[in-house]
Image (cartoon, rainbow, N blue to C red; front, side, top):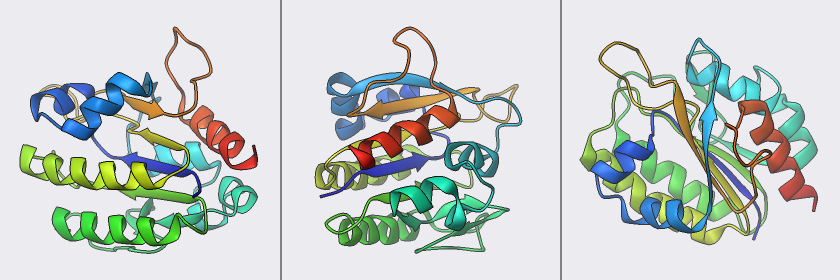
Length: 194
């Protein structure tokens, strides 16, 4: 098995608790836990560019160095890699989750994987419960993992909550500080290269 870097747009610890997401609650209690802080503007494409070190996920330094396969990663208003979509705003969450989960489970025995789940709108609890099941299966299949969201759910006065989540088998860089998107990429490379 290989390492998994899984980004989930608009996921917060509050949503995990409110929607009673069993797998993610378990990971929150047992894995290394932290808060991701992304500088504005809080857009998935910009956050992923910071994690990967490039606006082009397919030729990013992280992907080239790690040999990882790219699954559904946001780039320039669409997603790229396997399970890619040009229709982000109208994409069905169940179809996206089904494709990403099947693809990740197929690839992990042979390659490291960089994958994303993109919710075009604020996810409902029913979407998050499907996500919880998929995350449980994908994380169980990985040797090591980083699960993150660069920002949380939309708030009444902000388009996104400015803090996201970090759950991993790897320690975060500084125990009492937030995790920056660039650091997530470095941690993933260490996982793959160790």
